[in-house]
Image (cartoon, rainbow, N blue to C red; front, side, top):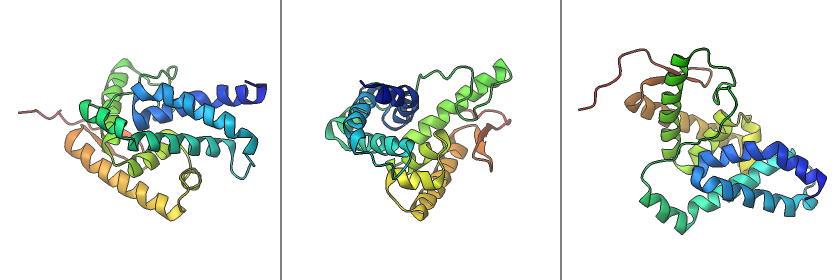
Length: 197
């Protein structure tokens, strides 16, 4: 590997891995991430700089993940495994959703439970909604960057994000002890937990 590509790999591999985990699950993510960087290394000489390097890499990653999600072998495997895998990637002491340190152990436990519920329901969204939501909420791309990565119009991104948030909010309101806030952050609802029959 040449120095330029090694730098690209070192810079973007953790981000691409985290992104791919949210799309295809932890079990498939490591191998798929390696495939993504192999494709990127092969295509790098043809990269013309019409978009940012980040946008270009995320487009390769998105296409590879969508190909994996659509493959018959993945569909069969997914039918066998009913539960959605939760990412086990450590990001220092920093909260994945806000980028801030968690102030107390109790808040960390509440946040972890909420993150698990949130990731579970994000994983259940149709792929076109899940992809834009992951790029927006978790990877913090702008709507224009998401449009560039996915090769769709800005209007389509806004519609998909709106519908994805709406669908996710409905699912969370019905099934998780949390609620939606205007700044795109989910926070715990302080009411008593629901009792299951």
